[in-house]
Image (cartoon, rainbow, N blue to C red; front, top):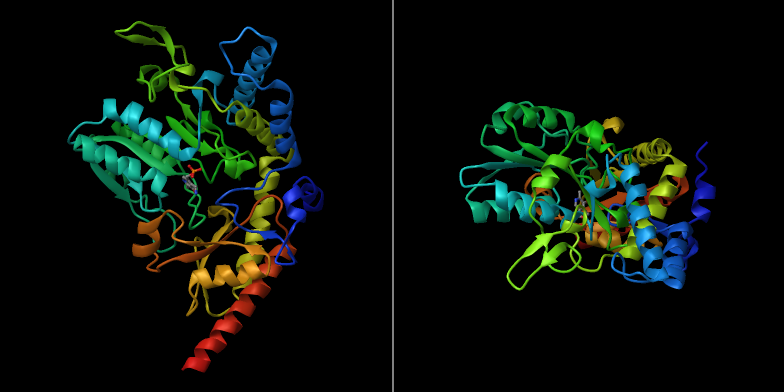
Length: 415
Ligand code: PMP
């Protein structure tokens, strides 16, 4: 039985107040809060073990190296990565995708080739591909979003052609909450010999990810959205693809032999981890995946589905609110973007903050989707995680009613 009250006790920040009200943190799609176990792992590393890794013979360096590599193994197991060296540490999803754009695409994408993304992509999974196309002369193609906020896979076999080199697609939209079934994309990509990159920034924190079952070539994720500190994330790469890839960044740590003229590369994964790595945050990320595993990804997902269902039902009490995203709960995660007639999303965010409620407002780094598909300047977005409660959803609804009454009356007064 999932006991949210017990879970909440693990997150010290949840007991603080904002503007004299209990914090209601509903900005989880932007970043998650951290449990004490993660904070302790980080503090313990800096309190007892801190040293640079891999090169040292002294005790602290050996301890730091062992802890860093044990973290990689644990995180690899969490995503069912076949071997730890296929999990590269990066700063976040953005860096992981840029690594693929620089190290793989620059060597494999040529003029006349095609890269396919969808209309719901975060800028992180759009802008790097725009650049690859600009530099190589390849073409960027779009999988459309349908009026029901799911992706249109009806003509995948026309969108993907013999020229398609890569499909880069999110597994869950940070704006619509839409869960994207990756299998049809994988099947269509295999038929034309294209590789598939999955942006797991929003899926990894909220559902079981098995990269081997998914069969993708690249999987990118951010630690900070899944209970770990900011500054650590990762990239899984399929073995054959990884072995053929040239380095991303060059310098220390990633070399085997260096002369004044040239260098050879270290073994995997170090060839892709130039410079001193983020050891403490990798260790803290392994504590985060341990925490998530202990709670159970299926239980977390069920908890978020229940919260989302409750929130969508209660939002219907406010006539002026339009929500975006699939109505079928099995097709959406715990993210609700919405628009309130006559009230700018930033005003909603500001009023809610006075009530201690944190939501996000804006284009959510998906400007083309918000502006030219949802046709609004911005949305307000509430996003749930494993520590949120039904009472917090109710607090959100009451605060939204208050916002509507206030701005509705203000408009009435002006009219
Ligand atoms: N993709 C998606 C779907 C996201 O939601 C985000 C973060 N909002 C990113 C990529 C980028 O993640 P980061 O900023 O951690 O690199």
